[in-house]
Length: 263
Image (cartoon, rainbow, N blue to C red; front, side, top):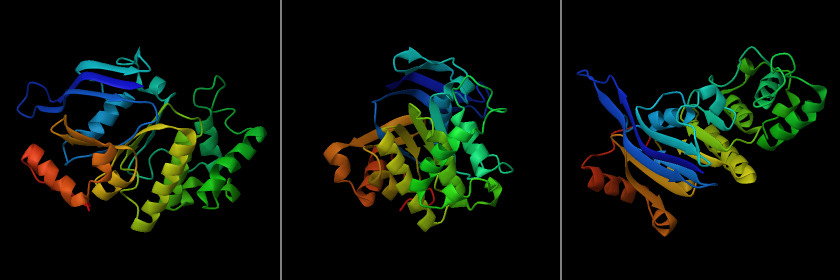
């Protein structure tokens, strides 16, 4: 489904601050995979998602989607088949526009009509309510509410709906619950899993929380210094605990996790 072949990306090349954020990185992601990604700060996790989304141009290697080379495809064209959420609930929405208007713009993704002039159409409103109702946040009754007035959890859940209202081939989640309190984070994660499973969306999710990384998805990718340190899947992953994973990481990398909120 998605394949990265020998991908490298270097920041500040040929300077004293040179940093190889991705170092000959290769990975094959199968259709329907839900891969959680962990690693210490600077491991290359967000850079990986930026490279896949087209936000950053890679220096070496190739990226393929469904066997089509998208290495040099611009970010706005990849957005037609890649959905993305960020850590900050303020990203991904227009705060001065209504819930309905935000969903309307997202629904226009990949459509041929002008999204600015025809974002809101009467026949689309029942769909918007249908999409929002499973969230159980009451947003289906607040279509005219400005998004800036929503709580962080409501806004992140809305952003998730916006990213998937037109089912993407790939969903990229960059610590999308990290800025939320524990209860809201769990709620958004449950919503995430329901949407991913219902629509069979291939997903990559970065998290600093090892417990979350092992609870959700079918594979866990551990990164270090722009490379894959190891991948957990199947029975090995099912039997893995937070403590064992930290110990395995230390054995594989000769380093200790030094990040926040790992447990």
